[in-house]
Image (cartoon, rainbow, N blue to C red; front, top):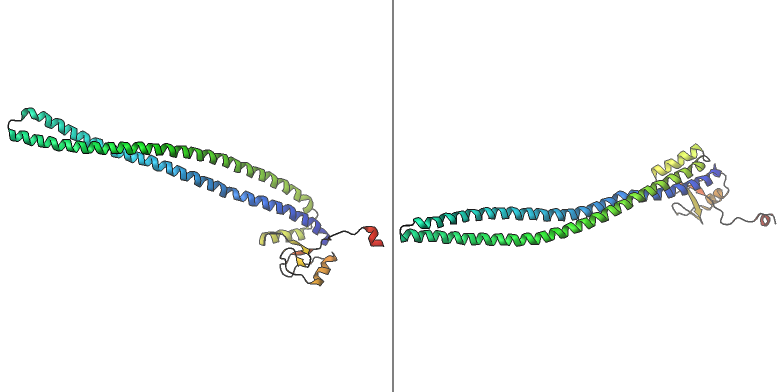
Length: 245
């Protein structure tokens, strides 16, 4: 079964690339959500300014109604001037007219304030609209980039998935089940290359005797610490004629 480790190592490399691609793909929803949140902030600013204008117009309508009432009252009092008989009645009427004029002046002042406030808020609304339109363009552009990236990643994953098949056919079902079970339970890879005196998976020191057994490349040996299957990779292959001398 040791002779199948070469194929399993190649399979691990392919799966490693697939894992990297899937991690990149998994970031896409978060990136898109961040863009949506940023766009939402600008939309909320736009909505706030729109609401402010609605509130100002509502107040303006209320003051316009008050002004209309006072102007109607003024017209009524002025019309009564022709029917006044005594100085006392005339003085009382003029006092009423004076009070109405004062009220009209106050109402008109409030209306002017609202008009100025409305003009300023409209300017702010236009800026908010431009900011929102700019952000919406950025959102659409980056959204398309993310969608395109995901499509490319899916194609790459499909290609790597196809590359797995030749190696899977060379690995026994028992070893494949062991490999798949490891990946499901612990993630990462089942086979670890010995690096010097340590396990390439957990990086802990291996007993010399275990290393020698692995170097024989006969039976599968596992790391006492992490449980990965150990693999010995020759650093340099000696030339055949040197071995014979």
